[in-house]
Image 1 (spheres, rainbow, N blue to C red):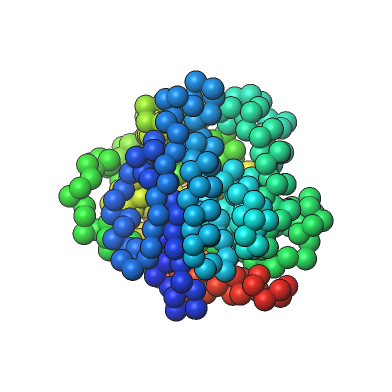
Image 2 (cartoon, rainbow, N blue to C red):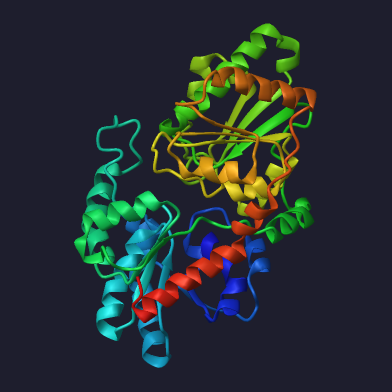
Length: 410
């Protein structure tokens, strides 16, 4: 959703008239944020579809909004394609089962489609992990994804992804798509969002305690992020031992760490903090918060932290809102993650890899100390990188890919 939302103001500049079909928000159980509509041009045609009631489908283990809305997407888009002229269908969502409709519409209406792989769809990453490390309902979702992915991918006219590795994996897996147009396009920085969040600050209850120096991470948690988080907790432990009075004023927030419905999330960061002996300085809020409350909370923090996954293919699309705040930012990723290169292009000073940075614990301790002393380096980012990774430039790259799909170019 965020990819399309940030691109809608610019698609027309590059020759594409966009219409949007999405699920009516009343059928979703995620945090709602009507402020998102302030950034969508008023002339964009939007069609909302229904979904089966989750209270009913959950009895059969089918709570996914993608599966609940599949029939309604089919009916609505069938009607649009019968009665209008469309050149391309674009799937940009992590609710991947909806993408199987692309193959159906291509066969019935002879319209090509592009899939945006914001995350891996079918993946063996968790196959050898313990049950505690696997996502909820992993047994079912793994088999469903293994069955559905080829239906959608084999007939796609083009692929977009935030990670080149995702595209490479798919082209190696399916020979049918080895020659289709593809592009690695990250999410863009959409600076209007920062203004919208600041202008609506009174809508949101503050989450941070102003009596402390607060370092904030907002995003999913998980055991796969522990390797990136451990150096921070170990550095914090050293600080608490050597300068207890000073470091007792430091709080690390991890917010929105679970995809589960509000009140049902299982903490994955606080248990690690307890094992490291720093849980009194760590606050984990598993419930997800709305996008603009996220941006506002990032702006209210003293500094920010982004941990990466231990999966080298992982790239964090969330880095752009973080960078847009101009707050001091600590980022720790797998050395192979593309996020490191992007952050280095921006000129972010506190970017490390948990597996390759020498003395990372001491470097992190310096960062924590600088936050407490208010002496962190200013976030003076490279203007070339700011332009390169802007939402407008990302919309241009998407449009170029669309043109290649239509004209048969590779």
